[in-house]
Amino acid sequence: MPLHPLRRAIAVAFCISPLSVFAQNAVPQLDDIVVTASRAPQALDDAMGDITVVGREELQRAGGDSVAEILSRQPGVQITNSGGPQTLTGIMLRGANTDHTLVMVDGMRINSSFNDSVHWNAIDPAAIERIEILRGAASSLYGSDAIGGVINIITRKGEQDRPFSAWGNMGFGSHETFKSSTGFSGAAAGWDYSISASMADSGGYEATNPDNINSYYKDKDGYNQHSLAGSLGYRWAEGQHLGLSFYNSYINGDYDAGDWASQPSYALTRQQAYSLTSTNTITAKWQSVLRLGLSKESYDDRAWDSVSTSLQRSYSWQNNFQLTDNHKIAAYVERLEERPTNNDGIEVTQRNTNSVGAVYNGRFGRHSLQASLRNDNVSGYGNEVTGGLGYDLAITDAWTVGIAGSTGFKTPNMRDLYGPWVANPDLKPEKSRNFEAHARYQKDGLNLGATIYQNKIRDLIIGNPANAWLPENINRATIRGATLTAGYEWENTTLRGTADFMRPRNDETGKRLQRRAQQQYLIAAEQRYNDLRVGAEYQFTGHSYDDAANNVRVGGYSLVNLTAGYDFSSNVAVQVRWNNILDKDYNNLYGYETPGSNFFINLSVRM
Image (cartoon, rainbow, N blue to C red; front, side):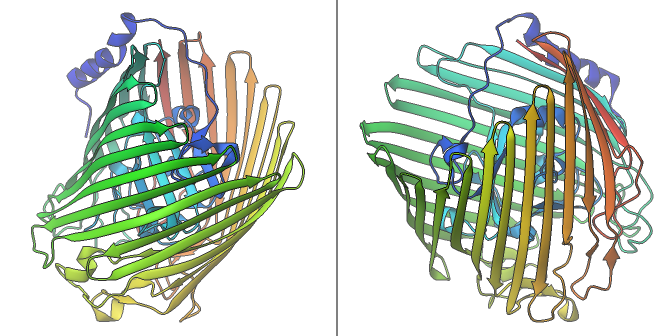
């Protein structure tokens, strides 16, 4: 899909226009605050559990990479890519299935009720402030789907008492790729606001190769994408805030569907999320958070004339009680209404879940404790009770050790239960028991971490190839693994490394769960010379199997990436990213292509 010159000119003007009108000093970076680990805001250093944050600076340096590609460089994350950022992509946390990761935008779940998919291709990094990754079963916090963990995407928003600021990006890269984005935010006189918009266009590359006998079609598969996000809030009294947020993204992406499909093969994907939140301080120790949310995704496959949608309405009321300086409880009730559709027909088109839960956080000197309990009443399944318990001990000011246990569950998606095509209404929910232990060291710029875990999953759902891929519950699967992390910062040098080791097994057959690599490593270094920053990354991913019987082997691969950036001033900078500089020929799904050596150059402006 070549970018029309007029559209490019409009995009450039759109990107730069607000920057010539407004000028403000850059806003200092605040300490990391996370919400995913306990459902309430807390400092990252105080959060319990295996949680990391991908911040705005890291997103900015990612160049033209997709959200999935950015996440693939984080500990415990593997991805499956079916031929480009515009195609269906899966993300696995700690070796759990792609549908075992609960994904949220600003706290609202966006996993499809129809088929469990997450439209990563429709999420633009330009609209994101940060991404919080919580690994390990988290159903006791968020309910169904969180067997492997939770990914919470936080969009850019205005902040209290923040002056007006504007920003813009414009970049070009391989495969005729062009991206631009712009936005502004601020807060004054009780109001806070933000808005951002982005567009992207790419000629793409071949999504498949001849090994994929069912889908291969020789052409380039490009895309164009647009997104709009924003927020508006009003603080009408101290501790009283009403806020509205929205996210709307659309992508028109090509893919390969074989010679017998209509050509060109492409799909239209839209992801939307809207919320209205009232945050009210009732007393000095009691905060009420009332939220109404709506998320909607749609997938319109023009090659096969197939359209599916998933509408989800959510209602929640959470009450945060600060019992003492070191003890707090969050208690909540929730309701989720799922309304999937498909133009080929689906027997049941609605499912409701009513939930109640509580989270306790306490600190006793050097001892920290988090406990969570939740009950979900799901239409057609009754009650599912999950719990979690974690304990940390600060041995010294630098060393912390801890253990945690949690349970999780996942209700089957509506397509697997009720069609169309193949369906099994007798499917049972998947259930898991997760245990982990960790040790962390942090002092004088050096941080070290080690986590071991085991996740035992019962009634895992897989498609049976001997029975027209009918979804069935297998008895058990066990995923054991360890993650090692290290980082060191001194003066103008930063070093970072991660290593993941995993043994994901189907306990019934003894075979490795498909599409999982057992080893994955990342080493990264960055050096700053005044206004110039240069960096390098080495990624290794071991081999995997693309079938349950472990007969189709997908080879491991190593990638070397380079990054650079230059600050012309405090407001203007350029970033360069060159992925796979050795042009390694690899894939992570059998028969699907990856982009090869590729680069992206981005100009960013902040005012």
